[in-house]
Structures are given as C-alpha cells and as structure tokens.
Image (cartoon, rainbow, N blue to C red; front, side, top):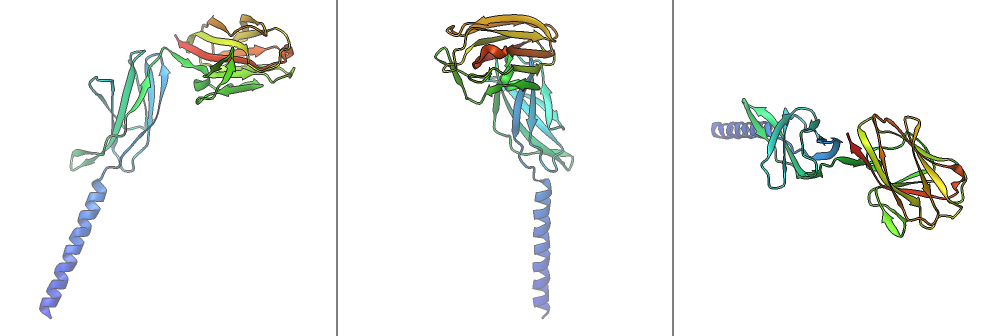
Length: 253
C-alpha cells in the first residue's frame, strides 16, 4: 500500500511539475506581430502601423533599403513615424515583439517584410477623400476609366452623362504641398455637349482655368500651391458630360 501511495505521490508531483513548466513556457512565449500598413506622411517620412501582441513589453522595428544594412528602432506604441528617409528609394520594414524574462529580452519571430517607395509626391485619390462633393467618383485599387483611348488610374471623375447639375470636389490637403499636377479631359464614351472650362481654387481663390474641347486629347496641368488647405476642383453645370482627372499628384513642399 505504501508503494502504491508513493508511486501515486510521485505521479502527482511529476504532473504538477509538468503543468508548471507548461505555464512558465506560456507566460514567457512571445507572440508574433505583423505590419498592417505603411503610409507616407511627408517628403521623407512614413508612418508604420502594426498588430499589438498580448503581454508584449515592446517591439523592435528594422528597416533598410534593398541590399542595405538593417537599422533598428525599439518602440512601445503600435504606430510610429520613421523620418530622414531618401526620396526615390524603396525601403523594407519588418518587426518583432519582445518580453522581459528574468531581466533579459525574449523575442518573437520577425514579421514578413513590407515595402514602400518614398516619393516626393502623393496621389490625391490615395491620400484624401473630398469632405464635400457632388457628382464625384474616385478610381483606385486598379480601377480605371478611359480618356483619350488610354486607361486612367489614380483618378477621379466629375459629372454624369447628360446631367446639367453642379460638379465639384473640395479637399482638405493640410497645407503640405507646393504643386498639383494632373491630366484632364472628357471621359471616353461620355456625351458631347460642347466645350467647357475646368476651374481650380485655392482657399476659395481661382488659381487656374483650363479650357477643354470635347474632341481634345487629355491636357496636362501644372499648378503652384502655397499654404493651400482647401483645394476645390469645379466643372460648370452646363458641361453636361463626365470629366476625367487622372494621375493627380500633390508634391511635397
């Protein structure tokens, strides 16, 4: 009987020790994070957002240009700004979480690598939605319309076919940019109801008028901006067609 009780006691102790080891491993195990988005916030800066890991003390972010050495930054928040980047270059980013275990950092696995090319401009339709508009439609995520016989991406349209309603879009572009460029013309297949003017306003002041003929090929427009927050693009109500704006870029100051 004593032998049976002794064996039972040893089994219980072994089980308790095993469970303690399992609990200890679970407490010290570090989950894996992943980068959810990278967005450009300035001419030489990006914002990195990532998934939080339960119980993590902090995170290690690494970034580099292709073939370059990794630069490391330790962070505790799940959003951070990386600055002093070079325009025209593509950067790779990866992350991992860590916990402090017995005075030492224990790391999870690195996330998959995400990339972004830092440019001196942003596409309007990828960065801003109009805060006020009428007869506006954006074309993003590979969607397009045709203008001058060619596909137009990173674009938007103003108007409806054979509609004589007002057509405009107001954007808050935050005063970050010194130049706006785009192509403008009549959307292929839309009604031909005569020539029209497109008007661009900065802070409510007219800065550009572009005359568009119904048989014209798309025109390239280049407009200087200065401390512009409110940008308005307007097509007259009597245009009676669909006007396309493509490759719309805002260049950083």
